[in-house]
Image 1 (cartoon, helix red, strand yellow):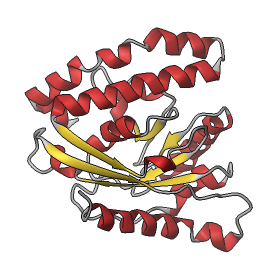
Image 2 (cartoon, rainbow, N blue to C red):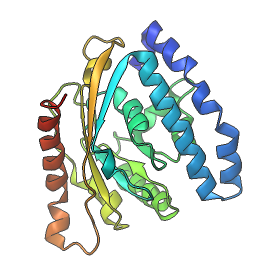
Image 3 (spheres, one colour):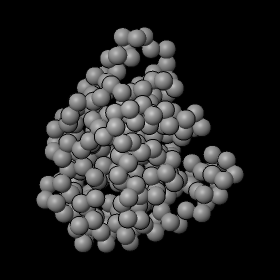
Image 4 (cartoon, helix red, strand yellow):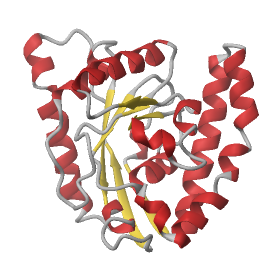
Length: 246
């Protein structure tokens, strides 16, 4: 992961690992006991604290709009655009009402110190070089959803590394439409400046807009077919609004 080639950025990531490690045993004990309510509680505390503290440490000024749309109970699937590595950090800071795990590419499992946390917070890895693994990853995610865990999936499939967003993939929608749980679109603007713009962590402003939940219950085939376009349009319109917000 190139972000670790930046010494200052690596130091910030390493010293904020303590906010996750504080809850490591509590998360594992709850999982061992199959106490999913307790597990979700500790995952939320770990990820929310880590995200907020790392934002401060990295000099990210985070502005969150639409917090009234955050759910009080899950499971849900959040679907944001994906500008840069910092998306995960700012989402952990902003989505602070229920537990969330991430659908992440499998090579991130080898990231020093952090790779193991994908599984610990009930995330799912996917091999993007193997198209067949996409469906398997979605099914693993659905198994977690059935246990009450919420997930974040980036429907673009990769970072845009710029303000403009790419096309949302229809396959990503199945994570929510198959178990018929709500989709919450999220617009993120500014994270590409945190690392991707100059190849090193820099201070900047990041804005997030959380949209109203979209029901996926009893969708017609046509409604399901159009869901990716619907979510993409909502997120894209949110990006335009964010650039006018202060």
